[in-house]
Image 1 (tube, one colour):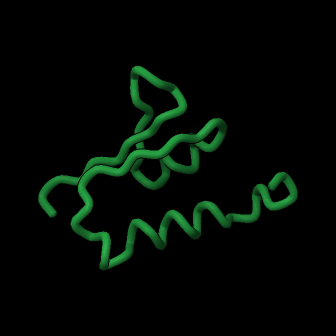
Image 2: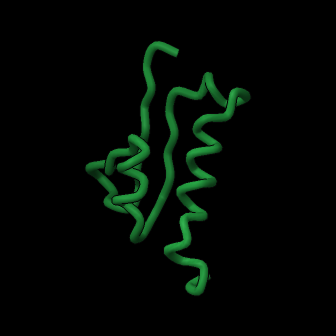
Length: 62
């Protein structure tokens, strides 16, 4: 929702999901975003070369 943009909800939600003990074993995360690449890059995601809207975060050694 446009009126909710910029209030930090997506960052807060994403940080909590990624820090969840129940999801600690997940090594590969993918998401799609049209305009929040900078936000997700702060959380360790990288753009996929084949699709600029898709991003991925890979953890190794969990």
